[in-house]
Image 1 (spheres, rainbow, N blue to C red):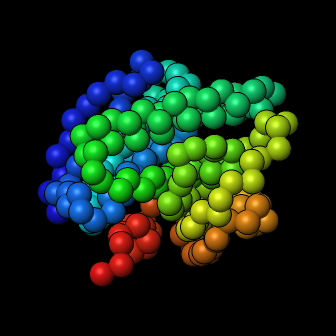
Image 2: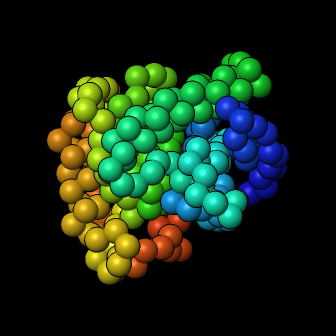
Image 3: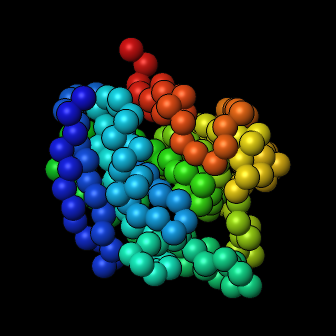
Length: 221
């Protein structure tokens, strides 16, 4: 699989775009990958480049919260986490709309299906966006070692059910398995179609995870 990458900037933040060979007569996945806390889109790109995806365009954005030393997060921890998560929702809504508009203009005839995935705080970002998003609709969402932060007071929207893959580790010493399990139970309680997998992994993206993501996001043969 050959992927062509280029850098751009949306909302004053770096975004890495990747494209495989596209057949516009078939559905095209628009896959947005959220990096972990205190990280970079390049770190997410390293993992994403190991996926073997068909008919997919990829977006690796930079988080909005500057934590220093060229590293970024999606929201701030601490007493203002609720407000910071709300700011993330505004940021990510604009991001998804920008990504959809960008590729829709490049491929006006394509059926674009928006998908999300993330690791750690990035997995949490994928789940939070899924709970609160309004439009455009989501196709599939995956979380590896994700969780739910303190959420805004506004009740999550009852959006259309989304197919979610949640993977978490029994030996994760950063995001305990009970937190990840609770987050996925919350997604199921909101009516989303959930596949949850507890593994023996630590806080990591394993080769097995990458294969499961490839199988999950690739269209049926």
